[in-house]
Length: 282
Image (cartoon, rainbow, N blue to C red):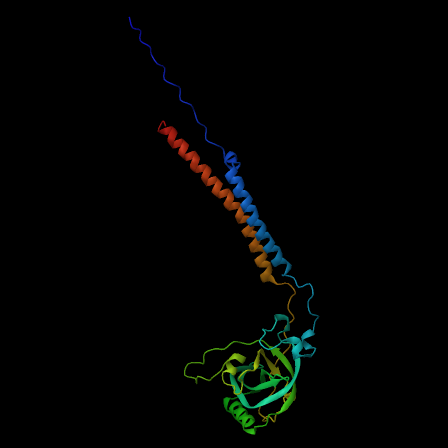
């Protein structure tokens, strides 16, 4: 007689999902942590560099801009004027170009809008070209008449100028309805486009606001000295650099957050897949 053998069903083995800690200690995520540490270290270095540049440990003494220096000690042709030297009083010798006297509009003197009469000044043995703001006129007619009179004189006068060296304001389009040659900003680049005899000569990027009594020119009586006060003494703390340093610190923290967030997402996905498999009896 054959005996029937009943086979017992194997017991299901319960699978426990991993903990977040177990996932974080896996080799892949430890490697990702090392990568996050490297990225954070780079960001921390950049933040330290920005912070180191945020405080000027050797600021210029108060009133340094009022001590007249040779122009060659402050800037050279083609170079941008460093921020601490904007408004520095300088001295320079050279010769006026006999015909390049131009007018720049929208210039304020003690709050009154008017015009600047400007000239091309040739410095040194090179020579190099320096844009100079000579004097202020209250009306366009007075400014145009002065520029025309200086150009008509035809005398390449020599002079030793003193005044403030100022950064280029940058060229701008003329106002609507104005002539194409109309200038509303003091820009050596714009003046250069209207100067003559400039072939092969170097040009200073900043311009000089000259003391009117040093120009050596026969100026009309209705021109007055340009109001050019000393620059305001600034703080030796660069708050923009401090902001950047804080920003780099945030980026460093974000590198760790991204590592944790990605690992946690992977853990949650693994747990979800195990729960779904358990519900389906797989």
